Length: 92
Image 1 (spheres, rainbow, N blue to C red):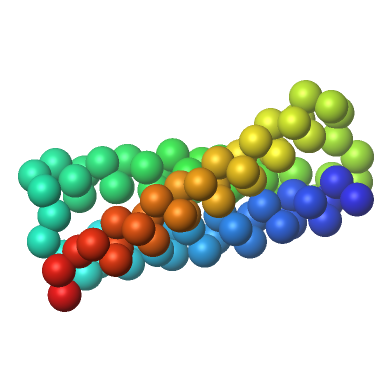
Image 2 (cartoon, rainbow, N blue to C red):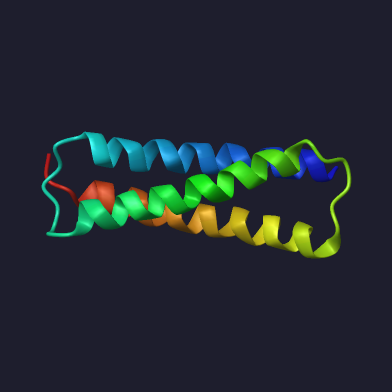
């Protein structure tokens, strides 16, 4: 069961990382320093995703690791919502 939940978390994270990569690759007009902050966020989330992928291969997780995984998953949903809002506000 823990592996399934970790796998779901990596799916959400992959979607978010793809959106951040799109923001970095497109020629969006951003406030000064925003591109650097997005790149930093993408790098940090990529590191978390690597651990989530390792957790997906584990059958049983200790309670602390399970809680961390759940919090990262919820954080990822929140960040993805913020990124979606930000992308809607960008000029075409």
